[in-house]
Image (tube, rainbow, N blue to C red; front, side, top):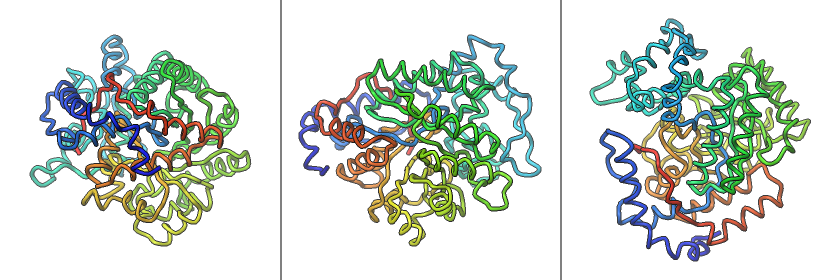
Length: 451
């Protein structure tokens, strides 16, 4: 699909582009008491704003638990104040360094007086880190935030997992809400991933609750959402059940399980790691069963070899993040030769330190684009990063300097890499070409974004 091919669906975009810009600004001003700065696009970019909002989107890398709305979780806490006792007084985190004090979870949540207070705890933006890292903040140069890290992002989940854990009714509601938000952004196809083991004592019950919510949402909003089940890097004992569940529910449409993933760190790639064997065995079993495999790799410092291992040893056909590969010609060649798809998450790459931010035009996504490597734009953990899928399109258009044909190419790549049958992929392509699918939904309320 070329830029010219998209002209027909975009005939009316200029007419409501300016309105889209104004709506974005008003929504952002109403959603926070902070100085939000300017919108992603000004009136001179009204057509691009309309394009970013209305383009039919395909999202392959988004975590359900990273999309839980903190405001709704806060409201649930307010209605059930006894849940404060679900938060441990102190918690040692699996990724803590030697000598680091435990996280005072209950005390920090009890100190929240407003929804915004709680949202700031649950949100991994560097300007919010003082709440979690006061001592580190004092050591930074004036006006600087501590550098982002994957560990800091993972810490955010500790502030809301106790609220949802084993709460099957709430999990179903949150899964339905996720589908609603995807619909509002005109995401016509999504593969949402999560670990059912992190959501309930009985992983099967968590899966059932999430599936009920997703199916209700898909029926109500007319979009497609399938599932990817995640193994968790530091819990290899869960991995065998993950692949067994994925195989069991692979044909249970709508909202079937279409693949597996390993998330929350890359330590399991190390040959001498006690975490490795369980995850490696899971992937071997997945290959034997013909299950699709996508793996987080190349996101953490010095992790470029993990991309190679994920592809050659674990059998991944898609790589989550993969930024470190951009700086190694042999890895780029491997990705090209194997036709591996890279799931790029722009905002996430900054906030986790996956990319040491310089200029957006130097982002690894630009390197992948220049080398013809297939990739997608994704939000990763939109609530935790206080962002949205739509914002990733804005970043590509305004910050990375891409044109509309570049963005359309990522949508094409996403369809090609989706864990779907050829027939289902062709249906998506037809839908994207249909001008009636390009639409700005008035119910969409964008999250605040600071890029």
